[in-house]
Length: 244
Image (tube, rainbow, N blue to C red; front, side, top):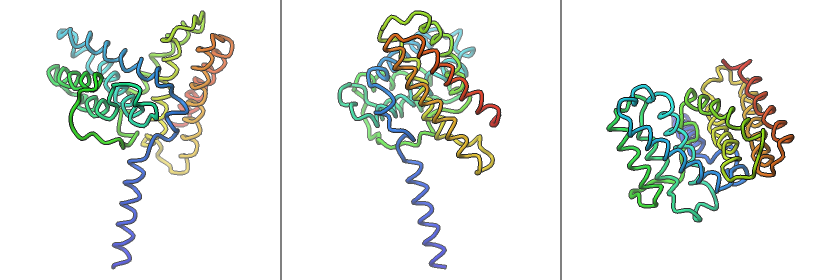
């Protein structure tokens, strides 16, 4: 009986360690700090505009608004783990927790309260005991994650037609990277444990291609950019052939 109890305790501790593990790929190696900061500010600006239109809230609540809060939770965790996070006043863990207060069925008042907390973290003025560790598979649901990824395709193609070296241009690809980390961690779509390596491979391929895509855009190399853009999308298509 004692052996069984010890085994159960060990498994629970091991499970907790997995749940609290860092991103499946070190954030520092795939997401430049400036890109993360830029996207945080972009999403907060977007939410401010969306929530200023009460008549349109219900129409956008489960779409773009939910996507923005989910993405902010991922970006907050990325900042919490980033070794250069002390170079920004944005509080990563607090940003993550604030974004997570928005729920799928949140009222407009709830969403506005969540945004207020998000903005406090953005300004470095949030209070509380937010911890660095958080499971990446508990940051954003799969559907809004995929919708946010898809929404970047046209923006990236527009940049690739004529990259000009502007700071905003590689951010879409870096956003793909951040969401890719959450995607790799969220394996609930994998019904057969034997398929986990396949899920991880497609996720890794998507992340790697997105990293190279951001580099190519930053270098204003549209040929290489198109190559990596296609590679990222091919990894998505291959994954969807197996996991519906």
